[in-house]
Image (cartoon, rainbow, N blue to C red; front, side, top):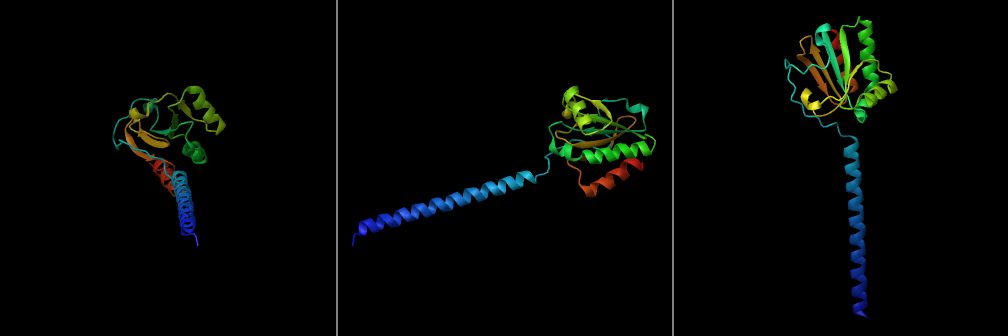
Length: 174
C-alpha cells in the first residue's frame, strides 16, 4: 500500500471539510447579522429633557400646544409610522385643532413636501432643520411643546402599536 497517497488523501479531505465548515460558519454569521439589522430599532440619542426650550421652528404661541413630527424622507421608520401620523392629524381635527402639528425635516422643502403629499399628511412643514438644534440625532421623533416652546413630552424612534394609544392620550388629554 502507498501510505503517502493515503496520507495526502486524508489531508485533502480534512482541508475540504474545514473549508465547508468555514463556509457554513460565514453563512450563519451573515444570516444572523442581516436578521439583527432588519430587526434593529433606530439608534437615537437624545439630549431632550422635559421643560427644555427648543428653537423657534413655528409660532408656538398661537396654539396651546405644538407637536413636532421630526421626520426624514429617507427614514424607513418614518414611512412605516405614517398611518399613525394620519391618526394624530385626524384626532387633532376632531378635537378642534388643540394642537398645532408641524413636520420638521432635515431635507429640503421639495423633498419634504413630496414625502407629506405621497403619504397624504396635511400639516405645516419646516424644511432644512438641524436635528442637533432639537437635541436629537435621529428620526422619527415626536416632540410635544407648550406655547412657550418648552418640551412637555417626547417619543423617539419607531412607534409601536402599544405606544400609539399612550401617545394619543398624552397629546389630546392635556
